[in-house]
Length: 312
Image 1 (spheres, rainbow, N blue to C red):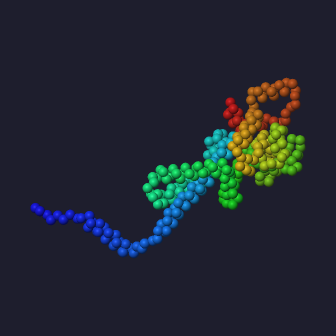
Image 2: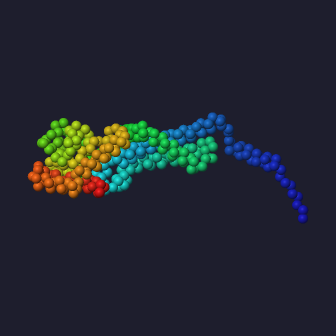
């Protein structure tokens, strides 16, 4: 049985496709647009990508600034270990902001001309890599500190690392104060009047403080005080260590590290070590100057215990 087979020529197929396209254009009333419209759209996508990468770099700079400070912070005064302290102090807002910005940057780059040809891994890697690299440079130049402080001043709902640090240290019932000494700081030989961040006036017992700590207090600088609350009426506080406020300006890692080492040294000196017990026994045997009734309290601090366990 023979069939009349008439193969379709390529020319007729092309003509058919052309007719269908022209018919669709006519039905949908498609009108041509100038080329500059597409150029503007492509440029807008590139601008969105660049903007989100720059914002991601600022988020990276703030993350590096806060993380560096937390790494050298006095976490033993608040937590048993660094992990729990860091998780509590983790800047979740900036982490979420960085992730969102990177997703927007990836979508923007994919929407550019020929961007659809790029693999998602390349698009994501280039966006994240550019933000991290620029963020490291911005953090080294101090932009992380500047952005964190500026947002705290102009965005009331935002809490900077300085705000969070002040909240953590203004806990007298947990043995922490932040503030400055009053102008007429001396009440008695071993007492200094101290005004905390809430405006409450305290009588600091300073008999266990080192000479440099007392000098730091008397300088009336903004400081952090670690010790133990003796009473609330009147408000009395035994000071065991005084540390400068480190969030008034951008501090280099070398300075942060030195301050942490000084803190560890101060706290370890309060520890009830065998060598110290022998020294106290010798003083008692030879009837040297006796200590006051509060001199043993600093050795009982949780921070002192934690530092002693680390040093062993």
